[in-house]
Image (cartoon, rainbow, N blue to C red; front, side, top):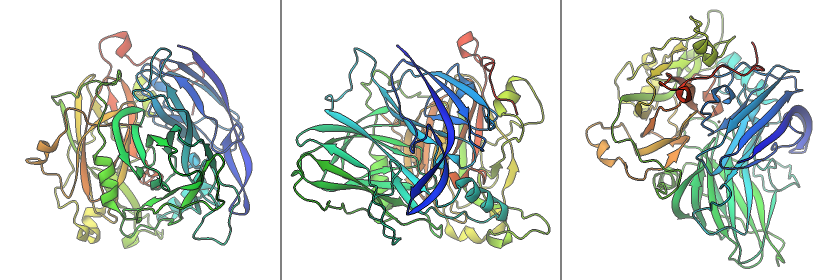
Length: 547
Ligand code: C2O
């Protein structure tokens, strides 16, 4: 195994998109930022120098960070931000995962432009569980605002209303040459060149802030071979559904007549009454010696095509012959039932607030709207035994039992009001944890992409309506469930996940729709130390950022 060492210079760049200039924050002068390419088993060392006017942290989405908990990155969860002018070195090991992950800023809405791919290949002497592809490419789906995304966020928070929707979706930083909603036709479109008859590994990453996507390539079928850097049984499809935070590795065989084909993504917007950008974004799959000049466009699913989204997500299974597979724990030590959804928090006196009932929009887990501590990270407060920063009374059950997926509850103000708290759930080392994630239909009925830091989890079952504790456990896949770090919990439905808490530290679990994060759709799991040096939280590194 090698040490892969690099520097990230966080700086500003004037970028031209949608026919106008915008100053954005980027890493090493590019959008998307640099791709990290490693082999499984390698150690990664990234020196981050913040030369931008923003606070920044970098999160390595999907990396377990065993023994390197201080490198996980979420602001005020594991670290204080790297201030303008400051620097911090992230050092971690990549073991037990092959495929595609990514990195992104984890501070305000900076990840709109501060993100990049993290590609993990098999270590020397090991192979993929599929024929070696002729080539590969990375497709990063993103979202673009003609404004500073941090300002979009903070102005929404100031009024309590929903933030502005984005102005474009992007593929590898470019909106593409088909935009339905603007007279401006950008001439910059990402192009992937292929040779007829060859097979390529396509690494699809959803780096957008607030949207899930359908992704298709005209006239081509795709075979899913991995999600979130865990191998899956090969799954044939013509459409990939990918939520923010998720990655999907597919094999693409260039078996059509030599031509130009659009790859395109449009939003999967399951929500009722939540505004979203309806545009599509495109890139071009270009065969060598292509004969035509106008690419063929795929027919994309409708924005609210939940059956297609559910079929895709619920048919993925794990490849249990993978060297990285470990069997599902068959017993459960910690059983949690967590409602996730929107709500309201109280408007201050003498304020006017833009949410319904003149309150502020909020989001919650078990009715707790998670508040980050302002001056210290949770992990540091835990490590140094500093009291008053958080509590450990996050509930195992919601405070009220009601018909969670009944949309009429949206007008029941007593169900809507959430509590703003910094409450964590304390978990014994190595316990097995099962969580029923139950969406609510409060204010909006949505598919929430829930992301857990520090672990992969098994997806045992998913369904619509209210979870039924008597009958739904019969649907659990305890044999080869897909392993993920991010799962879209079906709109108006539920999902059951399970993981082994074998990684001590403080691990954020939250909705990866960026708009829901400052509204409080998150909590953190405080996993206690085990009995060995390997299972004990080490002290922070010497250059750890101070608040
Ligand atoms: Cu990719 Cu906490 O996030």
